[in-house]
Image (cartoon, rainbow, N blue to C red):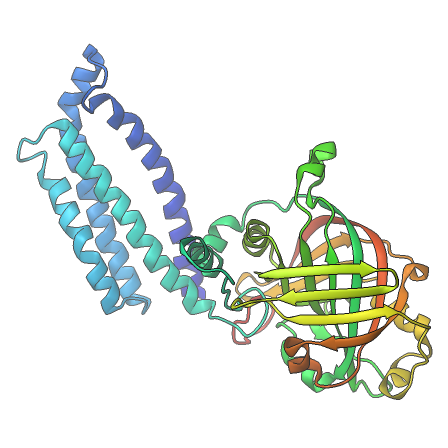
Length: 429
């Protein structure tokens, strides 16, 4: 694992350095192309450019050979990569020999640039191999496979970006900015599940919050709501131009044993907006976002209908037909865990922190979220809930549901608490 981390760091540094070099190469290339400036400075540049172009091509060819040796030593080389390398080496050979053969500066520059771009693509493919070995697909969380519900080139491009470990690694250093949204019609669906069922969903480094006198139970919730102009807080009044998609969050309650901080861990999330889903999945640590083909929340008087349609994608499904009902009297396992309905709400609602773990980064990540939902705003719901995704976790048990009309959502910050997480098999969400 340590060797992989150093190799990953070297790859990320390579992309940054090569990106700067690519910009510099473009600045040098433009004047010597046909139709460029004919000044004396350009003529002098044209005289020395074949030499510099040949040396540059030779140096990054040697660098590519060095990278090949590193990848082979790390066990990430394959026959497919050997086949993909053939056009790269051919282009590099042309780039190295073109100045010696007396080719024009424009041709030598184009060959050099083509070789450089092919090298970047080749490195990206191998970097993906390296990153995926330490971050294999997981059954839930941020590393769960993504499949867009649509078809065509846009859906395939979204799949490639969302499943790319390299894209996530490159975007990871970006700061998490404050986000705001005016949520409406927040519908909570809550299940008590055996702790033994919920435990496999907990990421390394975090602990399951257990309920009941013997810790036999855990709370599993999915909530669905309509965003109200979800966007950056710094936009101010311009935030009204941002979209208002439907989103659903599926979660369990966890604790950080090292700090005793409590929060929730998102098993999965889904939204009806592809760009927002990609941004959330790649930039934030704890949001394993997917895309719904269709999401609806329809309110008709005291009745609510919620539809989560994943289509052929990897988002969760649900169909809810609910209406306002009386305050329920707890019984069975619910009565074992909570003395009354208000106590249940006091446990379920004030969860203003999400947490996830990155064993490879040796850290726990937490998102501080401001909701401020008063318990008096939670209205009980009764009716039918149908969901294959929920049944896979909660079985056929009847849930407790409630509705919150409005919530002022504010995502404040993302904080990383560094610590050794252990030698568990990587399950980075």
